[in-house]
Image (cartoon, rainbow, N blue to C red; front, side, top):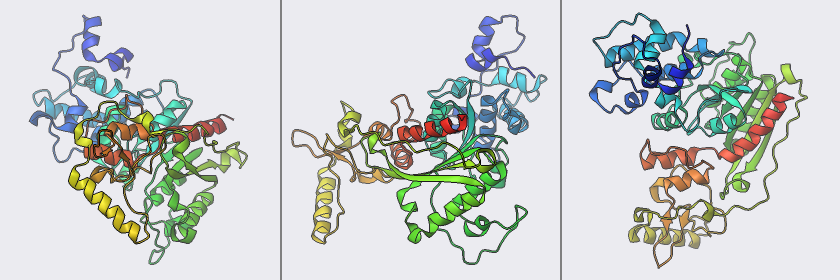
Length: 441
């Protein structure tokens, strides 16, 4: 099967303009974006057709003529035909198969014409688990990587991810049917996995790897178990994990010990360090970075070190917008409540309260609850105005996202949540560069 690169790049209309002798009939194009947003009844997905079905199509398009193509091809063909039947019930048969389906029916602009397109000549490949807004993807692509699989269970985050990368992430990575789509032979596994408490009690031992592995008992039922499971089965050259600073001290250090021992037991040389993003963005945000290299390949001789934190000080005023809608200014009622709340806890000797930022300094850590009242990061205003919360765009800037990053495919509440849960892109990029250096050596 041959797919014309010009069709994939410019879409069917441009193809017709430059190839007038074609015999294809124009039916109008199927936009995956419209299916996701369900803009009309004609684009509504039936109950059996999910975002995972759409994910096979975008992943296939991004991996044509690569080693990962076969992981998606058969399902992509089936799902493309299903969408065609739903959208154009009078045209149920395609004589030309997949090639004709792509050329005749599918609009590629919402898959390929995106702010962060797939790397054309990659130095390495990676997968993006618990992908969120795609901070790992931006960083790894900037270092020359090509994403061959992505997963994110939150449907709002899936929409944001699709708008920026043209890829619809697969959903629940804890399901075996989702893991089956992960291609073999990728180089780096990336995951900002959520941390859940580990419970050892009552878990029976299992023997899925030919011998008993501790992580099968100790991490069962946690999302880290699924990360470890994928690392064990796919054996990537390296992995890059990110989590909250408290992972190190949780349960008196037992949680992190389980994670470290598990990764070591799987045959990886593990490096970890708590890094603060304040050298990259004007925000105090400490996160633990965990990087591992496959001992079968590197034999514990990789030349990896974490980057030094830049000394240049960032200031919150650098990320502020010039003209901000008054709706972001706190109401008198909310501002009074926050002040009274702070006074009450101060009297008790607690440090709880709002965070009024010095514009020449950095902010507190942005959280996923920021949309509720903005209390942890408030911007002072002139003319005796109440302080205001950050706008979604300012939050994205605070996490290191460029202004070309698309935020408005979801509500502001969801955009705030996604920013609060995100990684800091420049920090992830700095670590990614060090990983790639080690891979190249």
